[in-house]
Amino acid sequence: AQTVTQSQPEMSVQEAETVTLSCTYDTSENNYYLFWYKQPPSRQMILVIRQEAYKQQNATENRFSVNFQKAAKSFSLKISDSQLGDTAMYFCAFMKHTGANSKLTFGKGITLSVRP
Amino acid sequence: NAGVMQNPRHLVRRRGQEARLRCSPMKGHSHVYWYRQLPEEGLKFMVYLQKENIIDESGMPKERFSAEFPKEGPSILRIQQVVRGDSAAYFCASSTAGRGNYGYTFGSGTRLTVV
Image 1 (cartoon, rainbow over the protein chains, first blue to last red):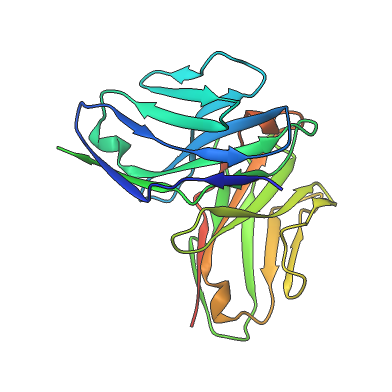
Image 2 (image 1 turned 120 degrees about the horizontal axis):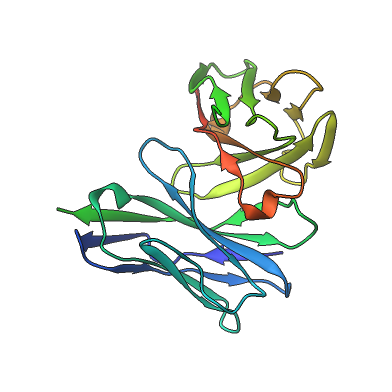
Protein backbone atom coordinates (compact mmCIF):
# COMPACT_ATOMS: atom_id res chain seq x y z
CA ALA A 1 0.00 0.00 0.00
CA GLN A 2 1.08 3.54 -0.66
CA THR A 3 1.40 6.20 2.01
CA VAL A 4 1.81 9.95 1.68
CA THR A 5 3.20 12.01 4.55
CA GLN A 6 2.96 15.73 5.03
CA SER A 7 4.65 16.37 8.34
CA GLN A 8 4.15 20.13 8.58
CA PRO A 9 0.58 20.89 9.71
CA GLU A 10 0.80 24.58 8.89
CA MET A 11 3.05 27.26 7.47
CA SER A 12 2.98 30.99 7.07
CA VAL A 13 4.65 33.21 4.49
CA GLN A 14 4.83 36.91 3.75
CA GLU A 15 3.19 38.08 0.55
CA ALA A 16 5.64 38.09 -2.40
CA GLU A 17 8.01 35.69 -0.63
CA THR A 18 8.77 32.08 -1.55
CA VAL A 19 7.59 29.07 0.44
CA THR A 20 8.25 25.35 0.12
CA LEU A 21 5.79 22.69 1.25
CA SER A 22 7.18 19.23 1.98
CA CYS A 23 5.82 15.82 1.05
CA THR A 24 7.27 12.33 1.24
CA TYR A 25 5.71 9.10 0.09
CA ASP A 26 6.33 5.40 0.30
CA THR A 27 5.70 2.95 -2.53
CA SER A 28 7.18 -0.12 -4.15
CA GLU A 29 5.92 1.02 -7.56
CA ASN A 30 8.34 2.32 -10.18
CA ASN A 31 5.85 4.15 -12.36
CA TYR A 32 3.38 6.52 -10.77
CA TYR A 33 2.09 10.07 -10.70
CA LEU A 34 2.30 12.74 -8.02
CA PHE A 35 0.02 15.71 -7.56
CA TRP A 36 -0.44 18.79 -5.46
CA TYR A 37 -4.02 19.94 -4.87
CA LYS A 38 -5.14 23.21 -3.32
CA GLN A 39 -8.27 23.46 -1.16
CA PRO A 40 -9.28 27.06 -0.40
CA PRO A 41 -12.01 27.87 2.14
CA SER A 42 -14.59 27.30 -0.58
CA ARG A 43 -13.67 23.61 -0.21
CA GLN A 44 -13.15 23.14 -3.96
CA MET A 45 -10.21 20.81 -4.71
CA ILE A 46 -8.06 22.44 -7.38
CA LEU A 47 -5.22 20.69 -9.19
CA VAL A 48 -2.04 22.76 -8.85
CA ILE A 49 0.63 20.63 -10.49
CA ARG A 50 1.34 17.10 -11.67
CA GLN A 51 4.55 15.07 -11.97
CA GLU A 52 5.16 11.82 -13.83
CA ALA A 53 7.63 9.63 -11.96
CA TYR A 54 9.45 8.49 -15.09
CA LYS A 55 10.28 12.09 -15.99
CA GLN A 56 13.37 13.47 -14.30
CA GLN A 57 12.52 17.06 -15.16
CA ASN A 58 10.66 18.87 -12.41
CA ALA A 59 7.19 20.13 -13.34
CA THR A 60 6.45 23.85 -13.31
CA GLU A 61 3.20 25.80 -13.63
CA ASN A 62 3.74 29.56 -13.53
CA ARG A 63 4.62 30.41 -9.89
CA PHE A 64 4.41 26.77 -8.79
CA SER A 65 7.20 24.26 -9.19
CA VAL A 66 8.17 20.97 -7.64
CA ASN A 67 11.38 19.38 -6.45
CA PHE A 68 10.93 15.70 -7.25
CA GLN A 69 13.56 13.40 -5.75
CA LYS A 70 12.57 9.88 -6.78
CA ALA A 71 15.27 8.04 -4.86
CA ALA A 72 14.42 9.92 -1.69
CA LYS A 73 10.67 9.63 -2.40
CA SER A 74 10.28 13.32 -1.85
CA PHE A 75 7.96 15.70 -3.71
CA SER A 76 8.02 19.28 -2.41
CA LEU A 77 6.04 22.22 -3.80
CA LYS A 78 7.62 25.65 -4.16
CA ILE A 79 5.37 28.68 -4.44
CA SER A 80 7.17 31.80 -5.66
CA ASP A 81 5.91 35.36 -5.27
CA SER A 82 3.22 34.23 -2.82
CA GLN A 83 -0.16 35.91 -3.17
CA LEU A 84 -3.00 36.32 -0.70
CA GLY A 85 -5.09 34.01 -2.89
CA ASP A 86 -2.62 31.21 -2.24
CA THR A 87 -3.97 30.92 1.31
CA ALA A 88 -5.45 27.41 1.44
CA MET A 89 -4.85 23.82 2.46
CA TYR A 90 -2.46 21.99 0.17
CA PHE A 91 -2.58 18.24 -0.31
CA CYS A 92 0.06 16.02 -1.82
CA ALA A 93 -1.31 12.94 -3.59
CA PHE A 94 -0.05 9.74 -5.21
CA MET A 95 -1.52 7.68 -8.03
CA LYS A 96 -0.27 4.30 -9.22
CA HIS A 97 0.30 3.79 -12.91
CA THR A 98 -2.24 1.03 -13.43
CA GLY A 99 -3.76 1.87 -16.76
CA ALA A 100 -5.19 5.31 -17.14
CA ASN A 101 -7.55 5.52 -14.21
CA SER A 102 -6.75 4.83 -10.62
CA LYS A 103 -7.39 6.14 -7.14
CA LEU A 104 -5.51 8.92 -5.41
CA THR A 105 -3.85 8.52 -2.03
CA PHE A 106 -3.69 11.83 -0.20
CA GLY A 107 -1.56 13.19 2.62
CA LYS A 108 -3.19 14.94 5.56
CA GLY A 109 -2.53 18.35 4.10
CA ILE A 110 -0.83 21.54 5.20
CA THR A 111 -2.51 24.85 5.94
CA LEU A 112 -0.71 27.72 4.24
CA SER A 113 -1.38 31.29 5.32
CA VAL A 114 -0.08 34.20 3.24
CA ARG A 115 0.35 37.37 5.31
CA PRO A 116 -0.17 40.79 3.73
CA ASN B 1 -18.94 23.49 -19.10
CA ALA B 2 -20.39 23.54 -15.60
CA GLY B 3 -17.76 21.32 -14.00
CA VAL B 4 -18.54 18.59 -11.50
CA MET B 5 -21.80 19.41 -9.72
CA GLN B 6 -22.55 18.04 -6.29
CA ASN B 7 -25.74 18.52 -4.35
CA PRO B 8 -26.75 19.28 -1.81
CA ARG B 9 -23.84 21.38 -0.60
CA HIS B 10 -24.89 20.85 3.01
CA LEU B 11 -26.99 18.01 4.36
CA VAL B 12 -28.17 17.49 7.92
CA ARG B 13 -29.55 14.13 8.96
CA ARG B 14 -30.64 12.68 12.26
CA ARG B 15 -29.10 9.44 13.40
CA GLY B 16 -30.79 6.50 11.70
CA GLN B 17 -31.94 8.43 8.62
CA GLU B 18 -30.71 7.92 5.08
CA ALA B 19 -28.41 10.32 3.24
CA ARG B 20 -28.32 10.54 -0.56
CA LEU B 21 -25.52 12.53 -2.13
CA ARG B 22 -25.60 13.36 -5.83
CA CYS B 23 -22.82 13.96 -8.30
CA SER B 24 -23.13 15.04 -11.92
CA PRO B 25 -19.76 14.62 -13.67
CA MET B 26 -18.37 17.04 -16.19
CA LYS B 27 -19.86 16.74 -19.63
CA GLY B 28 -18.15 13.93 -21.50
CA HIS B 29 -16.70 12.33 -18.36
CA SER B 30 -17.68 8.71 -17.84
CA HIS B 31 -15.59 7.93 -14.74
CA VAL B 32 -16.65 8.98 -11.27
CA TYR B 33 -14.79 8.73 -7.97
CA TRP B 34 -16.05 9.35 -4.44
CA TYR B 35 -13.81 10.48 -1.58
CA ARG B 36 -14.50 11.27 2.06
CA GLN B 37 -12.73 13.95 4.09
CA LEU B 38 -12.91 13.76 7.84
CA PRO B 39 -11.99 16.85 9.91
CA GLU B 40 -8.24 17.56 9.88
CA GLU B 41 -7.67 14.71 7.43
CA GLY B 42 -6.88 14.33 3.76
CA LEU B 43 -9.33 12.80 1.36
CA LYS B 44 -9.81 9.04 1.53
CA PHE B 45 -10.85 7.03 -1.52
CA MET B 46 -14.20 5.30 -1.31
CA VAL B 47 -15.33 4.03 -4.72
CA TYR B 48 -14.65 4.31 -8.45
CA LEU B 49 -17.47 3.85 -10.92
CA GLN B 50 -18.05 3.90 -14.63
CA LYS B 51 -21.50 4.03 -16.17
CA GLU B 52 -23.50 1.12 -14.69
CA ASN B 53 -20.36 -0.51 -13.25
CA ILE B 54 -18.49 -0.40 -9.96
CA ILE B 55 -14.81 -0.69 -10.81
CA ASP B 56 -13.17 -0.40 -7.38
CA GLU B 57 -15.02 -0.22 -4.07
CA SER B 58 -12.09 -1.09 -1.86
CA GLY B 59 -12.56 2.06 0.24
CA MET B 60 -16.26 1.65 0.92
CA PRO B 61 -17.39 0.58 4.39
CA LYS B 62 -18.89 -2.88 4.20
CA GLU B 63 -22.24 -1.91 5.64
CA ARG B 64 -24.69 0.93 5.11
CA PHE B 65 -22.81 2.53 2.18
CA SER B 66 -23.59 2.01 -1.49
CA ALA B 67 -22.91 3.85 -4.74
CA GLU B 68 -24.28 3.77 -8.24
CA PHE B 69 -23.72 5.53 -11.54
CA PRO B 70 -26.68 4.73 -13.78
CA LYS B 71 -26.76 4.98 -17.55
CA GLU B 72 -28.83 8.15 -17.22
CA GLY B 73 -28.58 10.64 -14.41
CA PRO B 74 -26.10 11.48 -11.67
CA SER B 75 -23.99 9.20 -9.55
CA ILE B 76 -25.50 8.60 -6.11
CA LEU B 77 -23.69 7.84 -2.86
CA ARG B 78 -26.18 6.44 -0.39
CA ILE B 79 -25.63 6.08 3.33
CA GLN B 80 -28.28 4.19 5.24
CA GLN B 81 -28.96 4.54 8.98
CA VAL B 82 -26.42 7.33 9.40
CA VAL B 83 -24.35 7.60 12.59
CA ARG B 84 -22.39 10.54 14.02
CA GLY B 85 -19.14 9.10 12.63
CA ASP B 86 -20.48 9.56 9.08
CA SER B 87 -20.25 13.34 9.51
CA ALA B 88 -17.71 14.46 6.92
CA ALA B 89 -17.28 16.20 3.59
CA TYR B 90 -17.92 13.88 0.65
CA PHE B 91 -16.26 14.75 -2.63
CA CYS B 92 -16.98 13.51 -6.09
CA ALA B 93 -14.50 13.72 -8.97
CA SER B 94 -14.72 12.78 -12.62
CA SER B 95 -12.46 12.09 -15.56
CA THR B 96 -12.63 10.90 -19.13
CA ALA B 97 -11.54 7.43 -20.08
CA GLY B 98 -7.78 7.28 -20.22
CA ARG B 99 -7.26 10.69 -18.62
CA GLY B 100 -7.51 9.99 -14.91
CA ASN B 101 -3.77 10.18 -14.47
CA TYR B 102 -3.84 13.79 -15.60
CA GLY B 103 -5.75 14.62 -12.43
CA TYR B 104 -9.45 14.49 -11.88
CA THR B 105 -11.85 17.39 -11.72
CA PHE B 106 -13.39 17.61 -8.27
CA GLY B 107 -16.74 18.97 -7.20
CA SER B 108 -17.14 21.30 -4.22
CA GLY B 109 -18.28 18.51 -1.95
CA THR B 110 -21.29 17.79 0.23
CA ARG B 111 -20.87 18.40 3.93
CA LEU B 112 -22.90 15.85 5.83
CA THR B 113 -23.72 16.55 9.46
CA VAL B 114 -25.38 13.85 11.53
CA VAL B 115 -27.15 15.12 14.64
